[in-house]
Length: 241
Ligand code: NAP
Image (cartoon, rainbow, N blue to C red; front, side, top):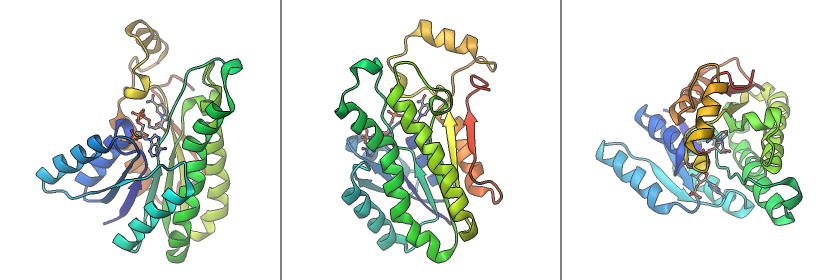
């Protein structure tokens, strides 16, 4: 069965991807940074179902910590088949209020992490001429979001990374794709009140807000697929068409 690293697997979309891939029989490393308690809870609950996963603390915005995470995976499995760059943060603020620290924190967590993770897993994938990288970007990287400029830039950068790497790595049988979720019901959106949620639903052709499982289903499809690369697949209920 395939070996998968999921960054930011302790909560939200990443948690859902970890739990479902593990239940499908994949070998999974759940990476987390701050949410150790949540990571252990996921590990323990899966263990009660007879499913073993690894959890590993690493701040993926830091090269040294990424190196340790990837080395852990290689020591454990020898081979990494799938990398899911999911870890991310968002901050709502007017562009005029964005500080250098805000810029660096968001870009480093959302985009530089994908650069580090991809570079560190690639020697292993190139050696066996096989691999799948999935970047979780966002609709805001496609169309831009007011008051989330840096976030939007980080996700647009992720999509460009996806397309460029797909071209460079296709001949080595490594597929690279982005999933650009619309609004998904996770803690990241806990600031959105019921009135705004209703407005979003009204503006969404499918009339609902997404769930982490909607993103997992696309992840699973991309892992299984053999002829899709360099694509930004937007799972958004039709909110952005
Ligand atoms: P979430 O519930 O806030 O979870 C974020 C996850 O990222 C947590 O597991 C967190 O781990 C991890 N993380 C943050 N900084 C990290 C770091 N430096 N190193 C390692 N892990 C880190 O967010 P979510 O909604 O599930 O979002 C997951 C991804 O989907 C993000 O990239 C987000 O931008 C993208 N996305 C979400 C939506 C949405 O509507 N929810 C829409 C489009 C795209 P710790 O708590 O352990 O630090």
